[in-house]
Length: 541
Image (cartoon, rainbow, N blue to C red; front, side, top):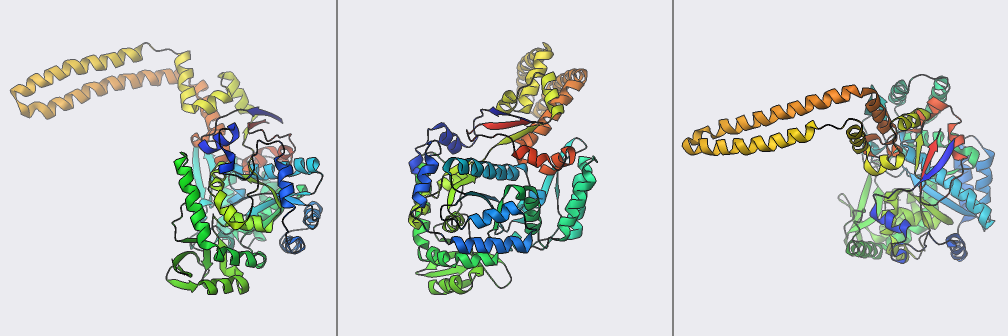
């Protein structure tokens, strides 16, 4: 494998301004990630905080031993959390099927790499932690994968009806349907020397997974436990017990937190940035879980009164839930980062482009909660270039710079125009303009004599123009047939590197590569030398 950097502009304006230095960082974040001493400053600030390290380590040890086979690197890292100088690098994602799109893998790699780099630099334990967002209830966001089937990108989903108000953490897995889904995915990959080994492993893992979240966690653990990755599931009822005290703080500060969010969002709009978080001023930014397991958003409906779909609670009642039944409460997009900050001695938070934008909206929320927001570090963006795709690119003289800056359709058109310049296209365009001018005069003359002719004349004009379009189409078709082999290369390149017009990491899944290159593919890609220099990473295999 070979890794190179590619400098690309971010489509997200705030992220582009952040990494280019144009953003006034202090307005949105507490630390500048372009500052060479950012992590030393964060360590100094964290020394003024206390964390329930013994309790956290004990909980994580119990959770991992309950759900996974002991792996020495993970157990060692959990034990190292007791060290008063230990820190974590954390990032999170929803529990996608077969780990979901590649960006989840890229985020985990980012966590592992930054933790290893900063442990060496700071000479303190830095533990990689992955926060599984089990609280999320939108199963439709994680119930599918994209595959290439018969030359077309298709979306395949698990066909299971779900109560969409129940968090994914509690959604029992339909083993038969999920296995059929896995088989259909691997059928599109094609059989290789590794297929049976992978499918047998997946079948075994599926059999010991009661929920979709468990299945995700088992697969993630199997892939990354050798690197000491510690998993923490935000929906685990036992974790809620550790969160009880901070839930009470969030209830007490509820209105202030909402006002802080609104003020920061208004500030961002004034600066020309578009906020992502949708929350009205009455939102309590907490969920209540009723007796049916439904996750209901709490809203303020009066002085120290909250409601959730017809159910009403006083502030005192919510505090009682937080103290005695914390599993009845959970965080939303606003309070989840605060809870993470409360629990973990976070050296850095690894974020995708969208997360960076919404964390910028939380600057004043963190201030109100009494926290410094941790350094928010863009995850590594990685594009995997297979040897056959690299060969196709070389044969049509296409660079990744051109592909990503112009788009697949544009570079294809430019190549075709260069290789087969057509003098007929401008002539047809000129003919259409001239014929329309002449025909318009004829129409006006005829209509002046008999207005009832107008519909026929308009139809006639359209027919003449469409015949010229047909001529152009026929010429284009002949040219494309002539260069079919090269144009097919453009199609393969676009499908592999820019599927659906976006980055590869948003469409393809890691199991395509594991099936083709073997189970050790993940280890090979983790061990490459990465730098957090805000450049796109190109990995040639």
